[in-house]
Image 1: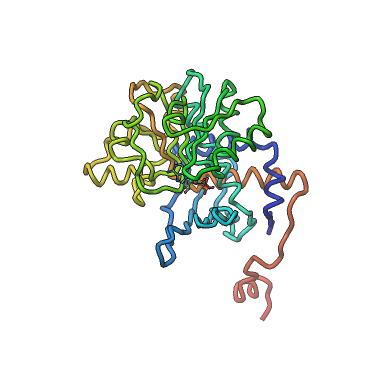
Image 2: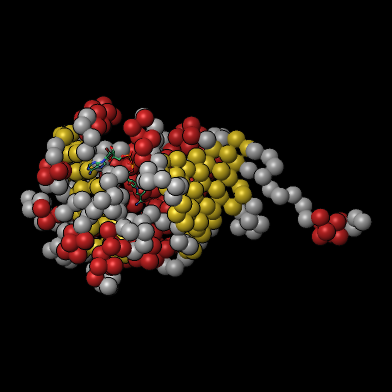
Length: 342
Ligand SMILES: NC(=O)c1ccc[n+]([C@@H]2O[C@H](COP(=O)([O-])OP(=O)(O)OC[C@H]3O[C@@H](n4cnc5c(N)ncnc54)[C@H](O)[C@@H]3O)[C@@H](O)[C@H]2O)c1
């Protein structure tokens, strides 16, 4: 079985963003064609009200290189105050003939990459030909840091990034780091109004209190796309007034997301306008005067697609190791019979 730890995955991901973007786009297309199996995620919330949780994402993705496996991801938001990552994850890939595990990868980087790639793809598809010159980042953590990488790929016309975080100093710190890494862009920190004036706004916070009322920020541009990655920020009214695009309607209308609450409050789900695979397939932006909100539940097929790309790059570059003994060995009776043994 192949084993790729944190440094292995980081090395394999280096320079791989365009490949990751393609892998995510293909995964969405295959999902839109029904060429996937995505059981609902299972949520485990340890006792106490720390907001910590762990989620299982089993999935199968078809196409020319089918793959199946399981992502197991923990979210412990209190880690961040201690200088640790909020999310930790392991991705298992399984052989499609035997079901045996074939690879285990450190997957927090894969998860962040696939989330950011899907957000950037959605921004491109939902804006169509319209340029995106300004990006607002609400929440200056791991996810939005990666969103910029992929948005710079899907929107090479991007010029300015406006950063906003609820905790003093975090937006400024990220702005300094980004300025060192991507000096070609301009960075500004600001309040919520400032961030919400951008062409595309990515919301990736750890605030699950449905606190963001888009109508309270009237200076937003006409054709704004809001990437609602953290799923529990928007008020019900914000959802109901928006043109809502999701990754999978059955998945996203669960687990008290803002859309799930909107469904509970209205008794219907007619406010969901499209799934992203359809928009990508049509090749043009939706014709709407409403703000467009993309709410991706985060499908396990994206993790599979990116893990597969990472594994391929690692194998090509001789990165990673092997661990023996993770297959269950031979069947006592049938192996003996096949071999003619007693
Ligand atoms: N939809 C998906 O597929 C998907 C995938 C991965 C992560 N996520 C979600 O993205 C979110 C961010 O993840 P992360 O790893 O970047 O977390 P992180 O802890 O690294 O960063 C979150 C940041 O949000 C800030 N924040 C909290 N409340 C805020 C508010 N009201 N306004 C502005 N900033 C605020 C925090 O101070 C922190 O800096 C999480 O909620 C996570 O569950 C979604």
